[in-house]
Length: 86
Image 1 (cartoon, rainbow, N blue to C red):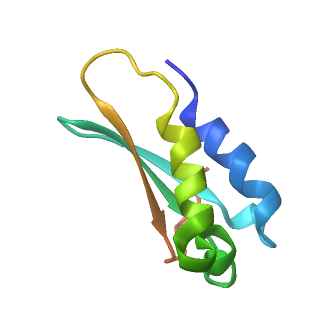
Image 2 (tube, helix red, strand yellow):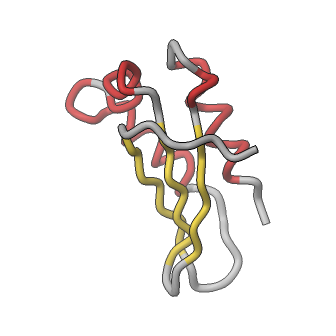
């Protein structure tokens, strides 16, 4: 399976001022492979963009990657700071 975490980080890291605060958490549900992207509160506007255009472009790229099976990929952008997992 494609490494969506690395793909998301590669796309988002150049956009933000605090790339060290990016955390991507994968969660698998019955219908989706969810990836929760936590960004620094100062970078939320950079990731979402005007009228959500940057976020939509990121989602378009991530969603275009083919996944085997019936599940779909979903990207959730979270503005609350996440705990880093060591």
